[in-house]
Image (cartoon, rainbow, N blue to C red; front, side, top):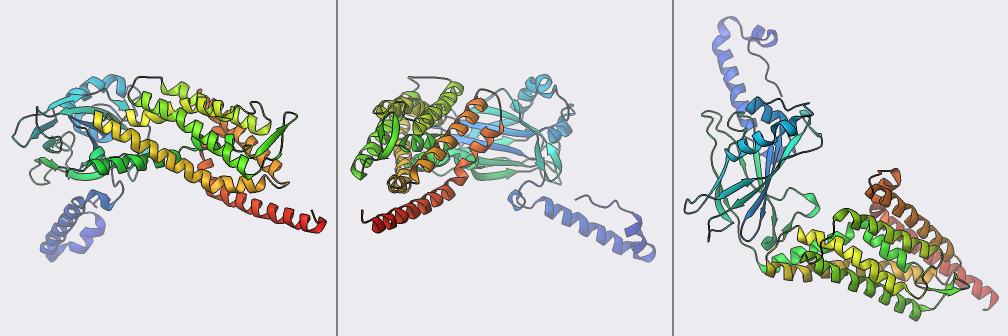
Length: 456
């Protein structure tokens, strides 16, 4: 909110003449009010104005930081032409690194300085704030303490922008900390450490003491287990592949077409075999990818995951590899496991943390897979004994074909509406499950009534 200029007609008409002493008091009151509002905690408003954020990732021997620096505030501090400048990143990348290196410093409890390495900046997409659209330079940094010093106890000096622009704020948070189970779940802002602001009277910028409490191996394990759960719960493509492959599991094959139900025992055995083969496949490459024994770029893996869904969807429509579902599930499981491994590899854990995380993450993946199978397959097995199942199977197969084609095009660099719709399938999952349950109960009731009438 802009403060009205002193002496504006609306105010001066009320405070003219003998009331000038009162006018001074009113002006003093508004100055104090503005100061109080400026000093309110940053979280009282979501983003009252563009601020710098410093997100810290705590590792065993160093701290990784990501600085998000708004261009409009940086322009005020440096005089560089940044806003609405297409050449801002190219022109100012190296000056920005030098500027930040001169304004960022850390020291341990003994006063020994840390080593600060500023990485290459990138430019974010335009964002919206209360003050209008803005962009940020996103800059990585590696902060390394002296030998033997703790990564959890240090003093942070950061006065970029905030020294020149006194209304600016710097929000500091811990985004990742394996020991406390923080793994940047859901892209949140982490746990706030503090806010850096300059003194409104002196302009001095205080140091920020950072003392992060220690966690435990158990907290780290639980955090990674939860990350595995979330990875599958939000990984619509992984779940769609598995469910599409299981869609014809209760059925028999006759004359190269899907026929009636093979019975509960056979259906359960197929479900166990297919899900087990998928587990073995993705567990192997999860291990190899996390340990960086196998290193495949992300883009082709994501495209192959879309291909795996397409193949399983075509198989659901008409059997193309009957009797070989285990090989297909295991083979494509190898591809899905590489995608899983990128999550753990990005955490840069120590050897013992990696070993524990592999177990916890895999258990989380399996727990969520089993939960989804447990709440889905009984309805499919029930439906397989009714005349409604062919329509359900074909509908599911067609949806999976369209979703896979949308994802494949999107991941090959051709954004399309199908890909966007496919991304929203996860949100429709509970409603689809409810519809499946209603169909299964309805179909079973109709089948039972028909058999009662015919005496069959």
